[in-house]
Length: 217
Image (cartoon, rainbow, N blue to C red; front, top):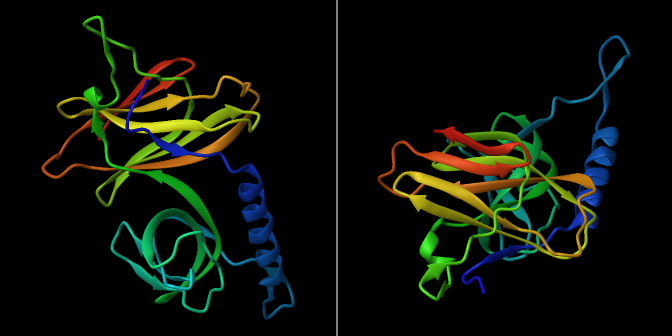
């Protein structure tokens, strides 16, 4: 049995509702230029630390480059209150303010050593789950390793994820898919692993359908 797993449930309905809400907001905010033509504001998507007040309202966005935007006029809510959470945010910046169109869930937790996930049985370690995923992009910013990955799913059951420190300076993503979830369409999922203090250079691996993808960051 695996221990100390952090569970992230695939919330498909919420994901599509978020996209629909963003589209409706975008259409509502189209404007006319001086020639009478319509234009759509330039949307920006970034990882950000999102501050949420005691009422569950988003108040500020803190980007990895140090930029901070005030979004107090926004009436978007999250499930968390009085906290700071990491999100993929789609927004339109306007000087020190930002108009937010969507907030996407990001799996974010500290990496743990491989021994934290292993069960010693008859003197040997049970293999850690590394079910394959699709790699869209991997990058490092603001003290995080960020991943944009694709999960083949039908939306059944809960996928389990964790960041594993395989060896000094090398990390990987653990992934356990539920047995009843068939590999069907691709759902896009975002991850952020906080880089441990004192680590300047590292490598990160993701197990894919084409083999092991490793990136040095």
